[in-house]
Structure formats: structure tokens, C-alpha cells
Image (cartoon, rainbow, N blue to C red; front, side, top):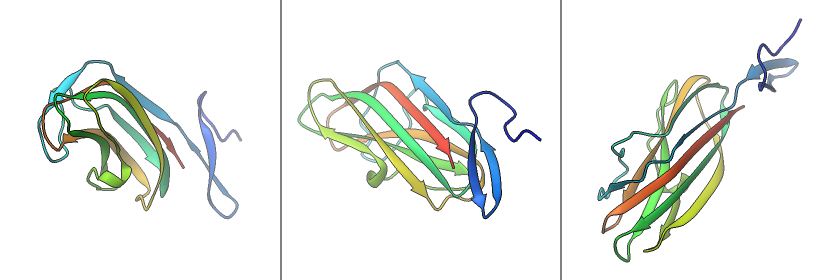
Length: 143
């Protein structure tokens, strides 16, 4: 019998002699929007947001173009909801002290997920000034 049921799926090992089909997903928002929040928060256009079925791990990639109105740092990270609940944190962020637009991205192996449907959503913060975030990309490869 066929293990994968759609194009673009990958097959992962979930236990000894056990395989599961997983579907990677991504979302992209081009709109530039701002925040002055000192803690991780949504922008006016929330996200990007990706919902996938995962095992206990996933590869998560984030990318963003950002600038700050002063000499302050911008951060972009992601929170998780669904089978797993985890707040956006600096250890899974991209950040830079910058007052001219720059593109930055990072990829993380996220472990400790609860297997099932998990929603990943980018969030943003600054430590001063007004942060502008554009070209926001999030991708998740469920393992």
C-alpha cells in the first residue's frame, strides 16, 4: 500500500519499523507592519501561521526583513499552539540591532513537541523605538 497520499509529502520514522507521511508547509506575508511591544506580540496582520501534523520534532524556519526607528533591537520568533503550547522566546528568534532594512533568517530543530496538530505562528518585539517587519516567512517540516 502507498504510504504517501499527496505530492510533496515526506516519510519519517516515528518508531522502530514504523513510518508516517508528513506534509511540510509554509506561509508568507509581504506587508510591512510595526510594533513598539517589548514582549512578543502579533502585528496587525497576524502571522504568518502554519498548522501541521507533527511527531515530537519539527524543523522550523523563519525569515524577515526588518528595521528599527532608532538604535534598538528587533526580534522575530514563533509560538506554538495546539497539541503543544510554547511561547515565542529569544532562543528561537532572529534579532538584530539595526536602523536600516536588513533580511535575516534562521532554521531550528524544535524538539519536545506533543505529537498531533500543532500551529506555529510568528510574533515580534523590540527593546525600544518602532520596529517594522516585512517579508515575513515561516516554514515547518514536521518530523
